[in-house]
Length: 248
View 1: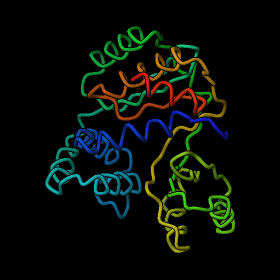
View 2: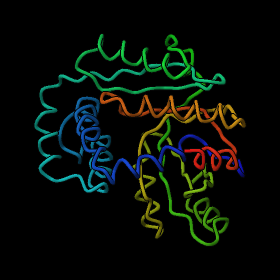
View 3: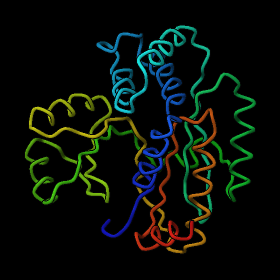
């Protein structure tokens, strides 16, 4: 959508700051543990979920020792993955993926954060029906983005979207790494590759104060230690994003 920023784009800017502070390392350690459990082992050659996480961790300059410690700890299998669903201001849908060793504590924390941010926790299926599991690759945007997108389509990519910070390429989850390798062979090196929940229908918020409240709630959720990923169907016109940023 031209002139609009989806939450995925806004979130990437925040994650860049988190990486700069080294804050992201503990999150990657938990993500490694979940990937080992879900993907079937600590060998990235046979576990594509783990391979993706390790690629992201290394790209963020996570120290090798930290990665190795996370792999060793993952053998314990103490962490549990949970998806919470809820609504924020203006009815935006939110999915919160956590990795926790204490379900009761985390559930109460997430409920409190939703309420503090002007939203509410919902039951299973209330929000997730509007999201689909996808593989996402972000490609750096050049001078001629239209030409880039045509090249991507020629390479066999079927779902391409231009954003303010790059070009998003979507693929079936099981074909994410295959698509990444295909792009690299075609001379296109993605900035990142990960599994995401992509909204089917977006909720546009074009009021500065409401947009700020939405982003504040999403930040509160993102900053919780157990939270791995936050997804939302929030869509904000670029002019409003600029005003929110200026307002601090």
